[in-house]
Image (cartoon, rainbow, N blue to C red):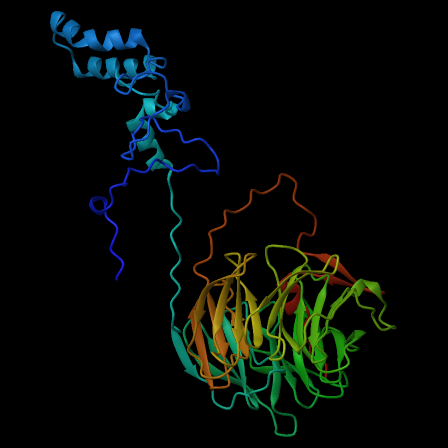
Length: 496
């Protein structure tokens, strides 16, 4: 026989359920007793409530308030007079303030006391709405705003072929040729085409002034160009034994990293430009980044190691000892990015066999966090306007991923490239990101939003002497860091 559906009419033993206890074996606190239809007798001693079934417990009642409420309509009729709306509103507020615990006359229990804000509900609600401000969610376009053709771009994970200068000019190396794209007017010009014996171009990097460009070659040479006059200012030779895939500026000092595993600091203002060498990597150096203060240099290599160098720890005549040595990655480390809003915070990304983004405290050498991205990490960029980190990836999606720091929650994932996104750079204002991939396209993304307006700082009463100059010690070599004018007047002189 099939089971019959249960219903109140089909069961003679159905009874209404009492509220269940929030904890096991706790007494149910029902206010009204409901007798069972099973005919069992009720024992009054088993209930906490005193009084009859239909007579409520009056222990919680205020008889003075009850009498006042019962006689209130009669008094209003006896003392009827024209009352202004303002007086009526005042009377209601006064009653609410003095009789805050007023309840129904026939009540089984006392009502819970409300908050003080209930005395003035309308005023509180209006003020709450005025204080309530919701942060508007930033719109992130899911497609590139502009796509440019980039034929003959070299598909090599260990190179750095894209950089955006402070004068809003982007440089990109396509084969043996370096092109300049002016973001202000959209014009394109050719800076240099090197001979086949020295090509292809393996790295490009703008100086802080945005006028001078360093070009690394496969022949282990470094060329320094003036982008305004399109003139070759200097060629650095004998620095490395093989191609130069990584460049990083520290004011007028150019740091180079080569396939020979060596890192060299060059002062481009003097004839004997090599002032310091770093030895630590056993394979090619593919990532180089100076911190904003200029006191720490991060390097990543094909040996899966990250070094943190402090130039003041050694002299120019000896090989510099590193400050920290990080071995947390299982693949080549090319992606390096110093945090702009937190000192001594470095983000690093590993290659295809690793696929991790790690965060390091370069002061004590601790690894703060590690996130598995699921694909090769080719480049990293911090936002200049928000606490966000952008990463570019390879197979399988070739996507750009925007992360919220420090929670590392994905904010957005942008796709468009059909091959791994090897090269990534940022506009001077921090708004637009340019990416180049092996699919031979250069794409521009409106990623980070408009920069925040910063109020100018009040000028001090006593001006600081030589505010544009500071000293950095490279061991026994002490150099003066100055403004861009100093770099323009001294840097890149006609020394071969």
